[in-house]
Image (cartoon, rainbow, N blue to C red; front, side, top):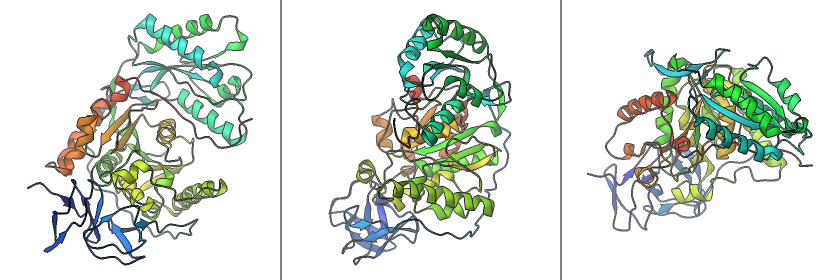
Length: 496
């Protein structure tokens, strides 16, 4: 018999509708029959007790807010009748609860590209990276010409990553731009890079070149357009040299321990914390047990669930860094005179998420149950295998770019509403429900919605792990097939 609702945790005083429930629907909760009193959309919450004003709502076994008035048993619980319990900057105490899942090393491999410095890419592409938005048109024209000449033979794609940054920036704002562009140029998914500058921008091309450190000068080239007579001819000459080298690269077997995966969600709904995010949690635990790396970001969407992550930190030093990660981001909101908890989005609310705690408790499930091994500032690159936390906002493209810039070779992106975008590494879309998967097959790569039907998490996770290995080995994601490839940098500061 098809289920009509789910009670996620025995302590919960709401249940989640698995399909649209009308006033004729009867719910059996531990032998008690509860009649639904109004139409409740899929993914939304139903009260299974009577609530007075300021009573606490429990979901996932944790408080997700309090009532703003009376709510009767069987009523629809949503953003109109509950509010967040959260407030400003908090003090925290380290109460470690460490549990590394007992998952054996299966000695699995994927087919990747081993670079000269030892890094591993899951793609072999040629990227044109402007230092400033003023040369976007030239970058795009060069990419178009090289694609026409080569038909992409021997490389996965030839892409100009246009953006609007690099000039009229100062201080940390300029530093963010330089850091992300540097990290892109050094990313192992790129078999070759042309850094394309103008010459008069704040983000001086030579300064960016210095930030690269000891890099492969055959595969990363620099062109400053104001210093040459014909930038198109000079650009094509450099790109042809880069292409000749990169097109000869071959995939070889690589241990799964070399895989670095970013964990992200967007357009979340009431099923995100029930299906797709827990599936990513299983994948994260599995990959870190194989010696690999996963990265959780979206700091504002940790608010309300942050203590769960803090108490999973491997040391008190990492706990302290996580406290700063959380409180510094709260201070960012406060400094800009914005409410810290102005979340969830309209789409989240339409999908059944009513408060930030509810969103965060679903969001953080992507990190599984493994120990947190490192905490990174925005723009920092990975240095420790295992589960990492990364500072970045919840914005889909900014956060995904930050994950890729940290060194992740692909992003796993769960969604209940759907989104087509991709960043500069493969961006795998995992649907939280089967309806979205069926509606948007050109966006969604994998369906976690079957967990609401007849598939077990054990069975689906095995399928998912095989899918991830195939993707790392070259199977294209929908964003790659559609050529949806973008980047965005965290903007903070004045524009001159």
